[in-house]
Length: 251
Length: 91
Image (tube, rainbow over all chains, first blue to last red; front, side):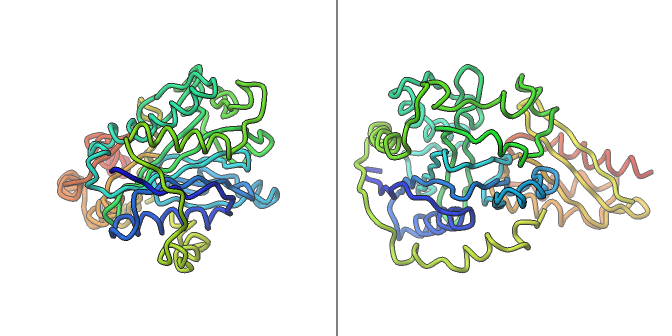
């Protein structure tokens, strides 16, 4: 990879966000789009669940309904995530055979998380990688990622917690046994945000700029800020699927 | 009968195997949780393969369906053990 495309930060709702990640993944896999780093946010807030998760086990649907929180099933595996408008989310799509991303799953997570860790360190956050797919500060999660490999490409998307709206956490039906394993009583004790560590807010645009630079450094590639292709702009069928009961409640 | 086995593994991943079993034979199977499978369809193929199987050939069904699938967060042996436990619980 000697260059990649950047889709600049923009808010979207949950089905739009997941549909656009898939549209980009498909276009990259088909060789119609270059490797792409997309930066985005979630408005309204949403819970995303992993491809294999049972929705009723993971999500407090009543709380979500009452609080205007959307629920969406991801194309990627992994766990349930609460996304608030304070989060910076990234997605990185690259052709499956691109030599700059290791074929083995663990190696590829590390490779794509490395620029995120560098960006966090640049703003004064002592972040480190925790296998398989987390970035932590003081044993608390500040960023989590998930990957899917389909349509001839790899998509890795993940969160960067600039801030968190803790009042929305009851949206997740967190299992105590899972959290105890990692030494926390509940989700609030398991995660940490940039705002809490620095004592000030960092804007999504600011961290996005640093992230792009770090992706350039780590991949030895030049970033081109550009728009979506025509193919990627037209994805009503994808968006419809992510909004559908069939998809969301399939497990 | 409906049977399910839930396991939490050392890296924190949670896996549930849920089955409908009649007379020792699997009528329906669902594998859910926060694990990863590449390609994801591998899990759906295992679920389909398990239908019509019993304790004598459930292992073989999983093993033949899993070829080329990379699992993260659960090992194949652990998954087979969970399937067999569901079947044993039904006896």
